[in-house]
Image (cartoon, rainbow over the protein chains, first blue to last red):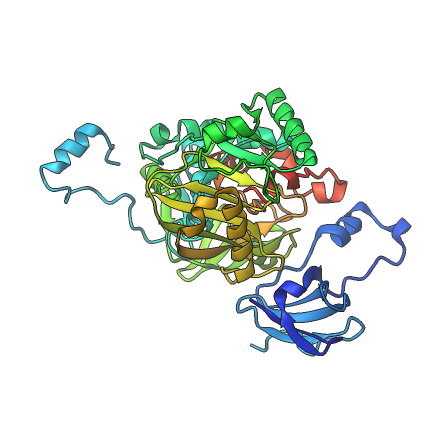
Length: 96
Length: 416
């Protein structure tokens, strides 16, 4: 069970109040008409699926309904940080 | 291989069953193989078996990072059915079901395949329309199945609650009598034993740590036993497919998610079919030991932790108690999770990759167990010939670029 910090409500709330919204920082294509089938496929379906640190979007759907980003460990599920969509993550990757 | 039979059982009883032969050999890896199969789960072992049996390739190794069938093969809820909506998926799962029907004889190993029937319940008018559409599509594909109504359901599963005074009353169901369950460990062991008898080397505790390619062609795999050269590599690693793909330098449209299941204390026989419901979100069957085997949907978020969220269990058991009020006092014994490789269209990816002679079979998501024999059969053919098998061709990775997706969320999304 995750306890997620909502950066808008400034509170730790139960996982059940939130919905998962997939990988964060995906950029919309600038010029859709000029794109090949391959780059469309990549944009629509191909996601990062790392086994260490993942940046993902969550929505506080049963709370303030804002979207925000989470950096989470994919093995321990530990939440490293939550931040607003306009911001960049502080934790990029594990230092080995 | 020592053939199992009633006569052998009698013979070994005289020596108190102490002299049975080891089921497969313990081997150390050779320098090179014709085919290296990465992943010693059901699908990987089945691939190795059909490569050896149908295609005459004898120099094969199966590399498993843990122990045989210790991943999702032993973590699933063993449900077998083929009532998928679209032609492509239905034909693949039906091939599988036909292989299941002769599997114990083929492997000379009792996989305890029990055709006890599968009920998919409907709780709303829309559910019933979908069920009728799916049953009709199945029948056009030569797959058994019919629509049943509450009185028939009560006869098939007498403990079920068909009262109209519940929140989600049961309006009907699709019923596939040829569906059922099998013993998951036995499937892995049976394939391993039969593959071993055909000369396949099974290497346990041999994780692959790297994939070496030269000029876009597979060369070797890096393991804890050193480098193993291979003419062809077949990758069947379920939840870890994305990790293997990134070793080889390409991406897959796969997200790994935790899927949970749980079993109860053993009960006297009380449920001799499989009951699933997409709407109240749960499914249940009773194992030969007597435990209720219960499962539901995947967690909403990605993860490799082989465990899931507690609230998923809570919702699952609420659904089961809604369907079977008499189960409300049953105590749960064990709960576990596995990592499933989900694709955007809930269908597998079988076939060639950007690396020459590297083949992928992944993305079975929440429902791979039922497909074990068929998956191994078509994948072995694909690997042996270097071109996709007729039934595997629609499942190539190209479909995510052409848009020819096979949307099986209705038949696969919740009911595994």
